[in-house]
Image 1: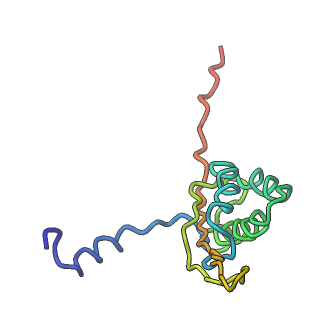
Image 2: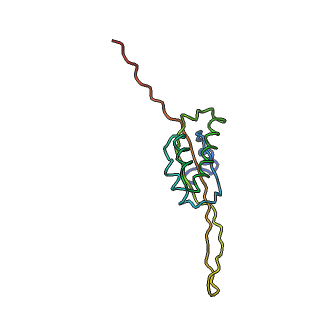
Image 3: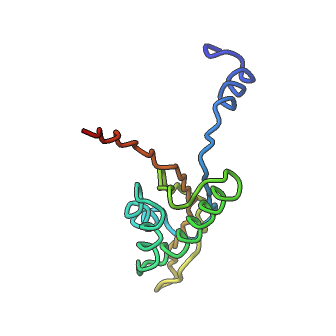
Length: 139
C-alpha cells in the first residue's frame, strides 16, 4: 500500500474531474482499426470541419462517428452552455470491445473461426482559446 488505502486513491482520482464535454459509444460493431482511420482524420479539427469530413467520407464508420460527434456537441450546448462554433475535437480514440466468435464451415469437415470485433468510441471536445489582439495605438 505504497499509494495509500484504496479509498484514498479513489477519492483523489475522483476529485480531478474532466469538465470538458464528451460522448462515448460502447459496443459499436466496427473494428478498432477501421474506426481509427476515420478518427485520425478529424482529430484536432474544429466541429464544423469535422462534420464536413464525416458527411463526405465513404466509410461506414464515419456515419457512426458523425452521430457520436453530434451527441458530444449537444452535450456541450445543453449541459455546459458552450457555443458550438468555438468547439474543436480535443481527443478522440477507439478501444477494443468484446469479440463475437463465429464459425465458418470449410471443406472436409473443418471449421474456420470468424471474429466479429466491436469497439468503444470516445470523443472529447474543448473550446478554442480566443487570443486577444493588442489595441492599435492612435498616433
